[in-house]
Length: 92
Image (cartoon, rainbow, N blue to C red; front, side):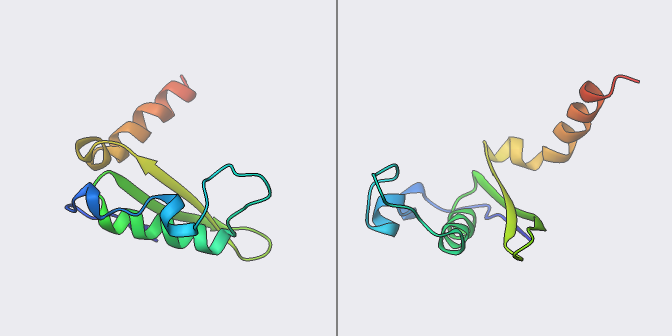
């Protein structure tokens, strides 16, 4: 699953504190994985600077996700950047 949105004003994005009711990093406060993934998907739908991808599932069938944050122009070129990264990784 890939979620992106080509246009949305940043003002429409809820902060993590607004969404979950506490400041991230607060002692003894954690966000469960499913609500966090839901928040990531919502951000990706509302922003042209985020791309949400589910690339696998763990042993408990929870999604493993990749949230890519960049400029809209760079997000459009992700496949190109991945090819460059692959060439740098394996120089054969």
